[in-house]
Image (cartoon, rainbow, N blue to C red; front, side):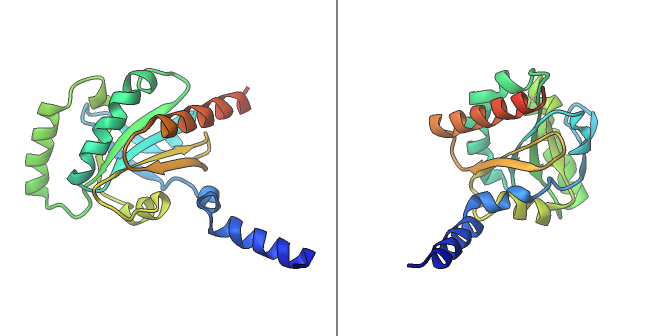
Amino acid sequence: MGETSRLLVFAIGLLSSPASCLSQQLPRTEFTTLAGTHALVPQYSGGKPVLVLITFSHKGAGDAAAWNKRFTSKYQADPRVEYWELSDFQGVPPFVMKMILHGMRRSIREPERSHFAPFFTNDDEWKKLAQFDNKKVSYLILADRTGQLVWQTRGPASNAKALELENALVKLWADTR
């Protein structure tokens, strides 16, 4: 195989890898947390990396709970990162949404309530960014302070994924010094 062919194969491999999505931006999304705080992603990040745990269905709540056990105490209070847990409710009728929110406010306590928000717009953009393909899993997205995607994963929490996340955050924090 010639040099040009090898470069072409290498370039095609890069473009088809998950890393090719890293040139994407977080969708500009306004939301209100269960604690009543209004926020805007990514502009709300205040110059910090943004970590978003997102579910597109109630069926992804199990994964989200597992991720929360791993890092809510670690990242919810860390002043170096903005942490949000978002759930997609676009298209849910308002009368049903009132009942859902009532139940969520009763079951989710502080400090998680300040970081948890339903969102009602841009679900197509979030699904594209997250490479959505399964409503039964959660998606974890890390963006730099400008909202540029730098790392992502999906599905159940694991030690390997948690270590990848920690390494990506350490690199981002080092780059902002």
